[in-house]
Amino acid sequence: MEYQRWRQYYEQIIEEFEYCEEKDKEAALLLSSLIKKDAVFLLHGLIQNRKVYIIGPAIRSLPPMEGTIIVADDAISSVLKRGVLPHVIVTDLDGDIYDLIYANSMGSVAVIHAHGDNIERISRFFHAFKGPIVGSTQSEPLDNVHNFGGFTDGDRAVFIAHHFGARKIVVLGFDFKNVVIKRKGDLETKRKKLKWARILISELINDGAPVVFL
Image (cartoon, rainbow, N blue to C red; front, side, top):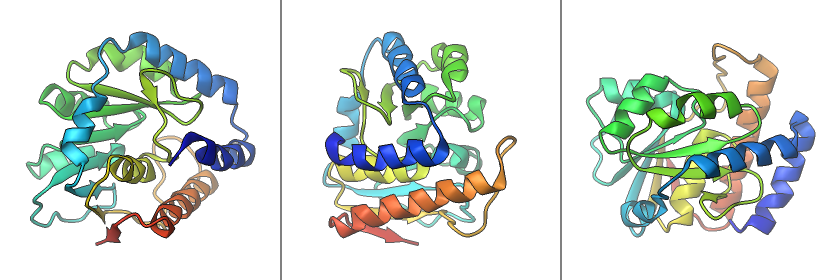
């Protein structure tokens, strides 16, 4: 999704959640200053014209998968425990940080997302990621921090797959009804985030994105 179109959704999101755009920009600038080598070219090779599986945190079991595997943040531990190393992790560093770092060290491309609420975690953990890194933002993109669209890690992963021309996008472990609270946060905020994830993925499907849910 082009940035100008994404901007319409972003403005609604920051208004509804009372986010500060300047803090989002601050986070993006910090991430930009830390990235020494942009691995975005790897996403082209991993995704374009390929079948892509996107795994969310509600995953119960994994089917046989022949294609590119993208894991959304909180699902990383479950996937690793099943003996699967994803090709790509989409994270705002809110999942199990040690599993995220491990997967990246083993070759998973870490798409690290910068927003106003994770500035401290970027500062604290970025240098522990030794593998390939791509930076992302929900505000205005920079040369080495990209805006692919998307709000939560899960729907952002779908946006990334569509952006790079996936032939088919198979979504697993997304539960928009049963809200699970993380170590921080509240039920109502989580519900609103899932609402937006559903809206945004629906917009991609309406645009012709080849998304199917399992």
